[in-house]
Length: 512
Image (cartoon, rainbow, N blue to C red):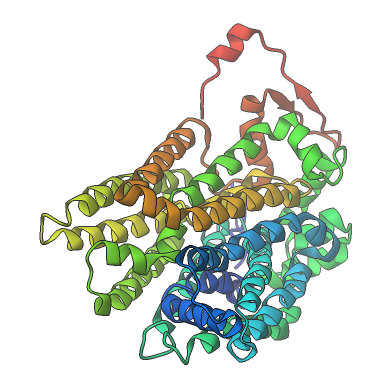
């Protein structure tokens, strides 16, 4: 692709999909994000056989059946240990990506997948349900790291005109992982009394593939230039990723970002919290990640069979309805990949949370009327599918993309650490509490999710700006007014100054 000129001025060259960029994206997403989705859904279909194993093992040890409350608690732990591990994995993001780089962290992370895969695979032979619970925690660490590091890596290797589309690829592979787990969970495949241990152990295969192939692809050029100061390696990596030798314009933008951050250095989480220039970016990613998880999406994935059973779907049909829901999720996420650069991030977030809010209200009504109206189970299924559609186009993929774009290089690891911690802690709460919530509130439990969707939607409408096709510095400048700081870009001296405003001026500040 040749450079062109218009009226004597160089026209900026748009990035393109090269073989190296595509393969690096696919290998990073398949080796890491796929596992996240797979482990979200893998315990759903074989749950009754796993609980039978828990009860049988308990009987052999103590010669008495397990009490129902104990079994419910153990099963809730088996489900919720995964997001709890994700929370601890998120706490490891900043130190690991700063020390090993983005690609290096992904390679290191494979140990947290291969080891628990072996543990879960031999759990029945070892006659230990404790192994499953511990392994779910360890593989959760893997997911906690990958859910933050993969979007960070892809956001940094992608050209700005493709950053949104590539940023959604991790979420696409999460949905593919969920679908694969649902398909393998069909009773005639692995979701049965003899195949569930193999089904749990298969999570190690994507990790082994990534461990073999990812070393052949470049590290993030931004990491190598801004954080390691190695411009030669950064240039070489950028040339491989872009497919041409002239990468001076991108290197210039990286140097400008580097200069603007020299006064800050590497930001820890505590220093990030005290940075006035990053206040609203930080609040925004916290709200979006809380909204993403507390909106109830993982309650549907963790307990889909239970929800469909409550809706009156025949037991023999539940597994196929669940697979159909997963297929819709994959299709809508693929759609989001192709429309995110045209529609923008903000619109997809608003539409997605709005659809989820309406679907939760409709599901509540349908579950309440299922005893009196014969066709209400179909409305319940439709409500879940509509909810999945809404979540797939906005709340699921976009927060990762926006989190990458809202923060510059030195702040990004700490920001992802905060966002990831909120994401996984919220996920853990939903996974642990929902069975008891469902038992206590019944169909009204989804009203709570509807309210959370509505509150998140209002916040995004008032605060979150559109970030598509903006450089990281441009997004930073967009937030400067709301944060009441002044960003002066010039000659390498880039101080941040607090804006002196009267209380009256502050009250007049308008949202984005």
